[in-house]
Length: 131
Image (cartoon, rainbow, N blue to C red; front, side):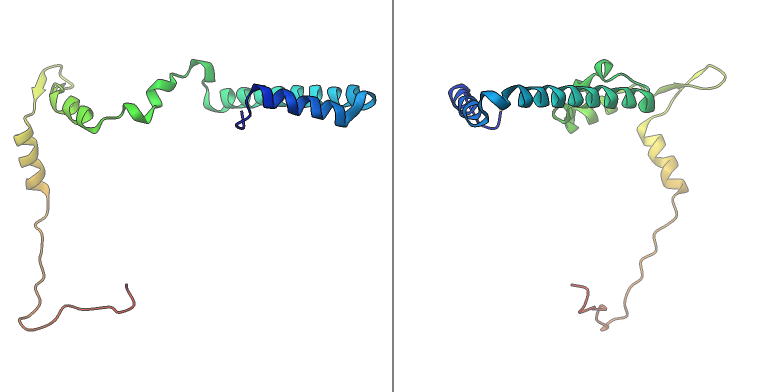
């Protein structure tokens, strides 16, 4: 809490009570209570607005699922490679697709790369303003 420990907080509270004085203390106590009520009302309103717009309750969200520390790229790749490649077809018969067959099918539909070479002795274009 702002780097203030227990004894420091008590000292600040006592100094605040002495500065405010007993005559204005009920007024400031009421203002503090109103601020706390307003903050709670705003928080519940925000919670309801999120529930209406997103369609989920904040209390029901599994926040561990969104923790970035759980994403290990090695584990994700390993799980993807170990997944079963058997996928049902509309007729209901499973079709197994190997990685090599899928790579070959993709390579067949990919257009050939065209490399343009400069004539011998010609230097590559240079843009002095690009860097």
